[in-house]
Length: 489
Image 1: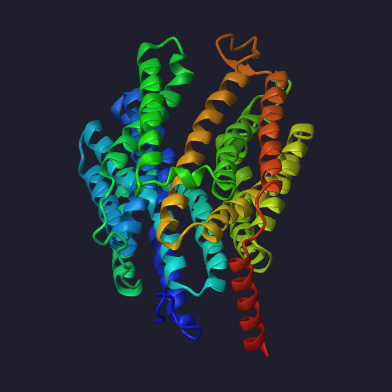
Image 2: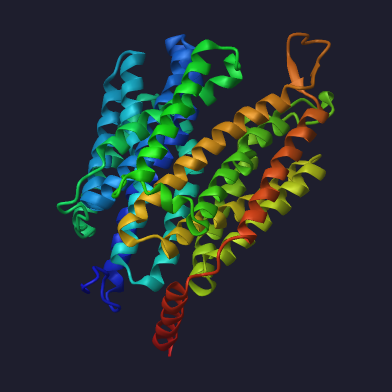
C-alpha cells in the first residue's frame, strides 16, 4: 500500500474486492427505504393504525437524515471502516428488533435504528477515495451510486414478493441476514481507515445542534400536506428547526475546527454541487408521484391510463435499469473530462425528459420513454455530484460533504413532494358513480409537471455555472488515462 493509503497500481483485484464489499453494505439502505412501501397496506390492515404505520417511514427518514451528515463526518474523524461496521450493526439490530416485535412501537424503534444506514453511501465513497488510485475513483463512485439506484427499485419488488409469499416479518429477517453478511465482507475485504481526529478538539456542540435542527425541519415539512401551516405543532417544529439551524450555522462558522465546515459550503466549488442535489430532490425526485398518478388515474378524468397498481409499477421498472448504465457512464465521463461534464449532460437529459413528459403523456410508451430519459440523466447526476465534491474537498472531509449532499437532497425531496401535492389538489374532478372520489384534473397535472420542469431547468443552469475541473484533478485523470492506455498496449 502506498504512503497515501491508496492501493498500488497493479493491485486491481483487491480494489475490486473493496468495491464489492462496499456495494454489499451500502445497498442495505436502499433496500430498507423501498421494501417497507410494499408492506404498508398489509401493516395498516394488521395494526389498524394508518398514522402509526406512517411513522415506519418518518422515523427512518428523520434518523437517516441526521445520520447521513453526522455519522459520515464521524467516519472522517474516527475511521470510515469503523463507522461502516457500526452502521451495519445498527441496521441489523434494527431489523431484528422489527422482526421480533409484536407491536407497532417496537417496529418503529427498529426502523429508527435502520435509519442509521443512510450514512453508508457517503462512508463508502470516502473509503473509495482513500483506498483506490485517483484515476479509478470516479468510476467506482459511479458503480456505488448505480447499485444504490438499482437496488431501490429491486427492493420494492423483493419486498412485495416477501410480503405476499412469506409475511412481512421475513422482510426484516432478510435485512438482518443481509447486514450480518455485509459486516463479514467489510471486515474481511476493506482495509482499516486511518482516524483523522488525532488529538484535535472535537466540535460536539456542532453535532448536537445539527441533529435536532435537521430532524425538526424534515418533520415539519412532512406534516404540511396533512396539517397545513395553521397547525400549531407544525409551526412550532418549523420555527424551532429554523432557529436551531441558524444557531448551528453561526456556531460552525466561528469554530476553528467545525464538525461540518459551513464556510466551505459557502464557496462556489462546494455550494453549487450541493445546490444541484437540492434541486434534484425538489424536481425530478417527484417522478414516482407523477408517474404512478398518471398511470392509475381513470381515463374519464381527462388524463390518465387507468392501469392497475401492478401494471403501473411495471412502467417504472425500465427506468430503474437506467441507473445501471447512467451512473457508471457518468463516472467514466468524470474520469476523462471532469465531473462537471457529467453533471451538465445529466441535467440536460433530465430537462429533456421532463419537457417531453409535460408535453406528451397520453400513452404508456410515452410515459416509459420520457421517464427512462430523465432517469438516465438522474443517474448520471447522482454519480457526478459526489465526484464533483471529491475533486475539490479535502480527503479527510470526503464523507462529510457527500453525506451533507444527501441530507440536502432529502430536504428538497420533502419540500418538492409537499409542493407537488398542493398543485395536484388545486383542481380536481369527481366521478358520477364515485362522488366522493376526487382526482387531479388535467390542468392540475399540467401545473405540477410545469413546476417540476422549472426546477429541472434551474438544475441545468446551476450545472452550467459549475467551476471548471481543478488542475490537480485534471492531471490525475490524464495520468489515469495514460496508465490505462499503456496497459492496453
